[in-house]
Amino acid sequence: EIVLTQSPATLSLSPGERATLSCRASQTFSNYLAWYQQKPGQTPRLLIYDASNRATGIPARFSGSGSGTDFTLTISSLEPEDFAVYYCQQRSNWPPYSFGQGTKLEI
Amino acid sequence: EVQLVGSGGGLVQPGGSLRLSCAASGFTFSTYAMSWVRQAPGKGLEWVSAVSGSGGDTFYTDSVKGRFTISRDNSRNMLFLQMNSLRAEDTAVYYCTRDKQKYFDLWGRGTLVTVSS
Image 1 (cartoon, each protein chain N blue to C red):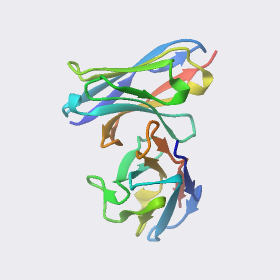
Image 2: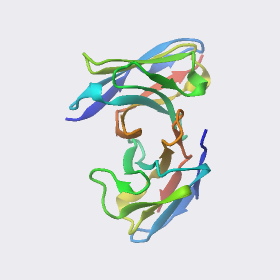
Image 3: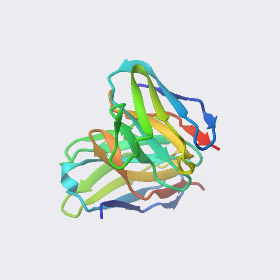
Image 4: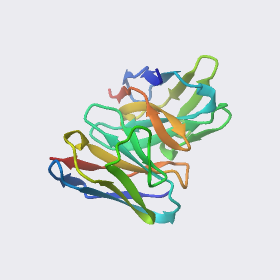
C-alpha cells in the first residue's frame, strides 16, 4: 500500500500570498495523483488529477506538479474562499486508493 | 442536475448492521464505477469500497473485508453499502462518490454512521 504524507499539517497565510502544499509518497509511482479541497461542513471537491490537470471549473490559480514520490499543489494568490483542508490521493497502486492526512490552510 | 444523495445512516450498537443507499441522477450511472469514502469525526478521508459500472467487480479496504458489501442497481441508479458486524471505529460520515478514471469527481451528501452502545 502506498502511504501519502502531506506537509505541513497546518499552513498559515494571508489572502494574496502564494501557498505551496506537499504530498510525499512511500514509493515511487506515475503521476496518478489528485488533490481535493474540503471546506468546513462541505463535501470534498476534486481540484487536480493526474498530478497537474485542473478539474472542470477549477480556477487557474490552482496548479499541481511533481512526479515519482514528490508532488506539490500551488495556489498562486490566495483568495478568502481558498482557506480549507486539502488532501492528496493516489490511484496508481490500488486497491486500496489512499489519501494523505490533509493540510489545513488557515488565515 | 448531476448529483448523488446518500442516506441510511444512524446510530447502531456494536455488532449491528446498517445499509447505506445513494441515489444518482443527471448522468449515465451504469457507465461509472462508484465508491464509498468515509471520514471519521475530525479526521481525514478513507476509501472504503468500490464497484465497477456493471456491478461485477467489487473492492474493499482490508479493515472492512468480510463485513461490508457494496452493490448497485443500475435499473434504479442506486448504490448500496451493507455494513455488518459494525465496530466503534466504523463511526464516520460516509460519502458515495463517482469514480472518473479512479479519481472521485462527484461526491454525495454524506450520511453519518455512529456505532455506540
